[in-house]
Length: 137
Image (cartoon, rainbow, N blue to C red; front, side, top):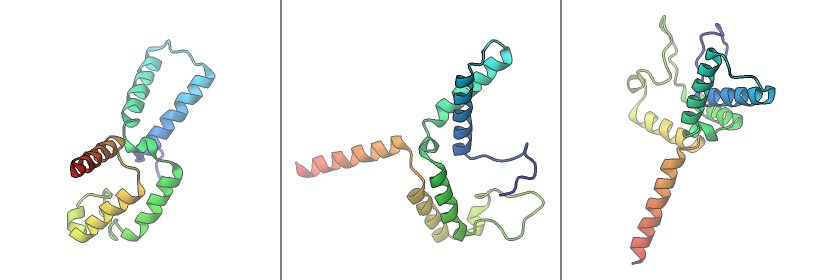
């Protein structure tokens, strides 16, 4: 991927989580003070963002998982061959560009490669255990 304007790039949740985690560690190691108003605002933004992202699947991703995901997605050819003046999102107008089967295949690929939401996985596991218990009765 080529970044044409370093100030105008999209980041994944994993990249933001990793960047903020690394920045937090660097700041902890350097022992920077927290006295200025701007510094306090930055600390609040970092804290709130990390708090939110730590509850999402991106907190369980790694560079290897992201690389595997991108490699797996290559054959799906999700981008249009002819681009308009403004770039389109990966999913923008996907219902017009992909068949129902392609969308289902895409969803399954994402579910297979990327880690899911831990809360949903725990709920699904608890439901399965409850079903087992009721079958044994």
